Image (cartoon, rainbow, N blue to C red; front, top):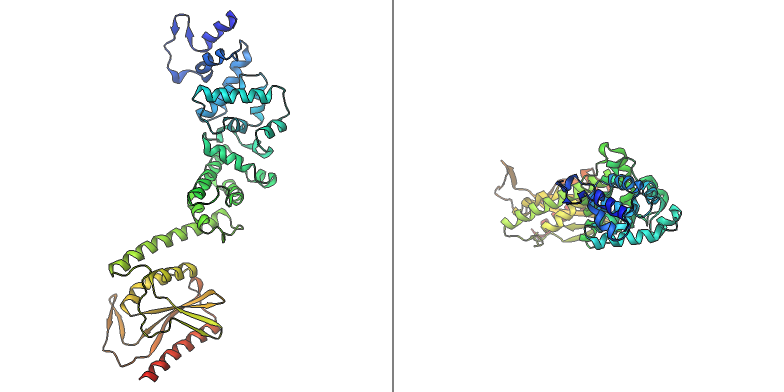
Length: 402
């Protein structure tokens, strides 16, 4: 090191010949903090561009770990800053998820970077050497977070076809930040649910990008909740859905889970387990009429599953079923649920929220209480006929026994 370089090192590091100046670390630039280390490796030059490039690099990133990596990278060559101006994502790739607080981490980033740019490669070749693709140039430095999750997200984005990825990346820095954060939540949730971090990732990239672009502030609330829903419905998830539609489905699903928890607690107060079979007496468990299958719903679990698939509140009738007031059946065609119906025997009365049994007439016939299709819709005439035939058959059986 020349005497002039040593003098510049002292000046840049915020010290004088007698020792450190009385200056708080928070007021020092990153270059001042790192100057002794850079000088020791022979990378600190007494040239005006060093300080200018370091200041610019530090200002490009909102989080300190990435700013440290950026400063470490731009001091190696006067043209290094040009690459970061064109593709700030290079710093995320170079840092590889490290926070760069350790000298060994900074040295690794710096040496690897210096080797990559010393022959002044074209930007496309430099991006390729770091495993990056061209659309990621659109991401601004201040949109990034530091750490392994962000690095993994950038790596996963490189597997997305360039055209849809370019369209998905939001333009505003805040929206880019929210988009990247949401993708991180998506991948982490998938992993927690024992799915691949890349599961439905392309859908998430595109749907979240479109939603962020169309939303004030680019908000992507509850990304982990949507991912949770998607992970549990991985084979049935509708890839044509918008993020907003998937979010509504996730809310409905989580509400169903909450209701199930409440329903389980209710059953336990009656000392009935979630999967315990509720006695329907002599009623058939299954019957086929004109190609339709009629199935008895005899536990809290199957009542809840019926309500979840049909999007109605049949599970809330568990109390009626336990008391013997209601008997509930599912109607299915080719394995698909098409209707739910409730029957009851005459001689029961609903009064003030309580079911009271009147003096029963011997072998009272069954009657239809209500029928619901998906989303509480009306059922088709064919289904109505099948249900009426089923109830008539029950009453005929009862009369025959009598």
